[in-house]
Length: 81
Picture 1 (cartoon, rainbow, N blue to C red):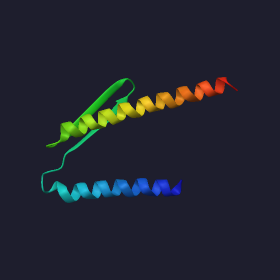
Picture 2: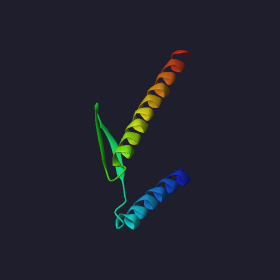
Picture 3: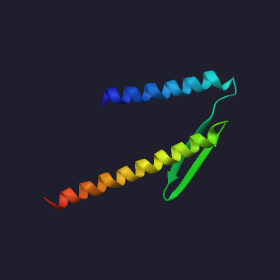
Picture 4: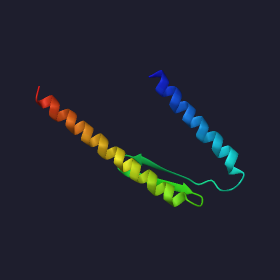
């Protein structure tokens, strides 16, 4: 568990550090997806901001579907006990 936390923190620091290094060149694109209840908020900026936004939306929807499948599978196995 500690190794996982360390890797997440290291990845976060690498992403933030690289954004500071390359932001002065003006070619940084970013985007994201936030789900607040049933309302999705998609945002992005830069040359490839729309592509990054769409990719994050697709990955967000995929995670929600996988969570639903995982929870549904867990409920059906509990009913067999």
